[in-house]
Length: 188
Image 1 (cartoon, helix red, strand yellow):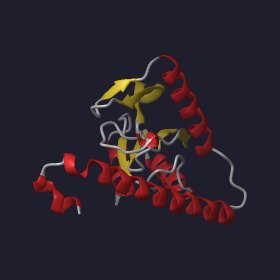
Image 2 (cartoon, helix red, strand yellow):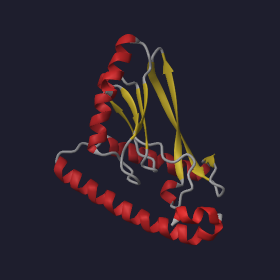
Image 3 (cartoon, rainbow, N blue to C red):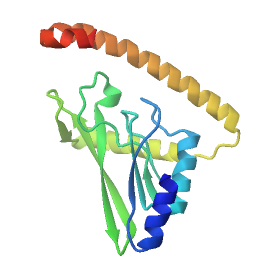
């Protein structure tokens, strides 16, 4: 249905910039699955100009797929996170001219102690930009053995999810009494 809607929109408004916000991907993994990469190419061929992903809670890379700009995950903008991996994200600034994505820039942000985002500066900014570049390279890496790649990907997802659950429970236990009692049944 989404592919058909994108095609219709592109056919009816050929000079339009079509931006899709996609809720996809596995949590906490820093690169997209092969299926996400395939779907991004399908959406781009249908006429999408930009595909902006969210859900993994961490920054994933940025890639070009058949002429579309694909940001697989921008990370968490505001989130009561409990790990360093979810403590930073990025703002994607895009320049569009005459219906074409001309350029983009990434602006790393990090979560402050009060959970508000702030633009990263100095060495932290440079570290985040290098990490965005590394993760972006993972998005376009050539995969020759898809079955082996997929098996490794799923193992990584399971490991990250198990570790995340442990950290979540530890974080919840250490902060449990800071929540108002009305929330305790929900937390438990």
